[in-house]
Image 1 (cartoon, helix red, strand yellow):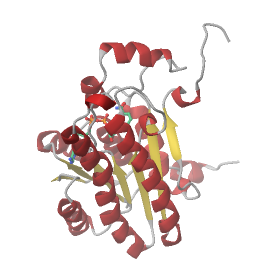
Image 2 (cartoon, rainbow, N blue to C red):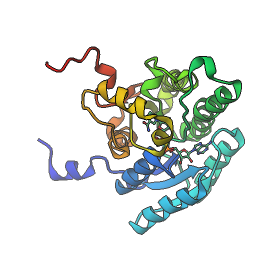
Image 3 (tube, rainbow, N blue to C red):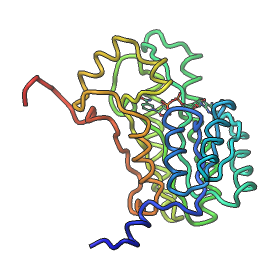
Image 4 (cartoon, rainbow, N blue to C red):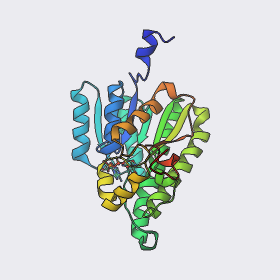
Amino acid sequence: MVNEKQQSSAFDLTGRVTIVTGGASGIGRAVAQKVSAMGSTIVIADLNDKGGKQVADEIKKNGSKAIFLEIDVSDPAQAEKMVSKAVTAFGRIDALVHSAGIGVESAFLDTSPKVWSSIINVDLSGTFYCCQAVARHMCANHYGRIVTLASTAGIRGGTGRAAYGAAKGGVITLTKVMAVELASFGVTVNALAPGAIETELVAKMHSDETRTVYRRGIPIDRYGTPEEVANVAAFLVSEESRYVTGQIIGVDGGFLAAGIMTGGT
Ligand SMILES: NC(=O)c1ccc[n+]([C@@H]2O[C@H](COP(=O)([O-])OP(=O)(O)OC[C@H]3O[C@@H](n4cnc5c(N)ncnc54)[C@H](O)[C@@H]3O)[C@@H](O)[C@H]2O)c1
């Protein structure tokens, strides 16, 4: 039987500080709003200064603390700067949701070295730089929650995802390695693997054909929302997820579970 005190403390992040990279838009923005509503102070780190400041202002208007830092996650020096500025502002970092990322649909045979390295630099190396910089701080404090953004494209093959899928596959393995190495420091590390979520990235990345074909493979029969991904991130940054680490959690309307789907059951 759960009493009232236990109920109200569930998912309570009062006094915690969460960095959300990519927090200016899409999934990161929804995570920043959700986690701030749970009581956490928020550091938005993004290249997009207009969008980032706007999200920080929205959070402050709702009564929580927030700052925006203009950061390119693909630069290790800027990842270090993100950590030192967050610690200077708020004294600690309890959680990182690393949502900064870019995507492109490009067939394997057509993918240029330039496209390949830009996706790998931001999506995979950016995850490494930010997680490492934040984890060093968390390990010293013997507490932390790290959530990376992988993708169903990092688990399944699919057309047009040579660079993006490879980067996300790398994020998945990196997440598992971090989970194993950081467990003894009280730091958990998990990845979200969203399917098709309606954001600016998907507006650019999914052609009309991709949308039609993709929907046929989703048992829940629609694209997801950023808020639906943020709900799972909220659990992973909370105290309640303390025994969950090294997991890759699909938020995909059943896409990864599905094989053949006829009209009937
Ligand atoms: N939307 C989806 O369907 C989907 C599916 C699977 C995985 N994801 C992943 O979720 C994450 C968020 O995606 P989204 O759909 O919210 O995209 P989005 O484009 O709405 O937001 C991404 C944010 O990352 C920021 N960003 C990009 N490059 C950056 C850099 N070098 N440094 C700092 N910030 C940078 C952008 O400015 C933007 O604010 C990405 O890692 C993406 O790969 C998205």
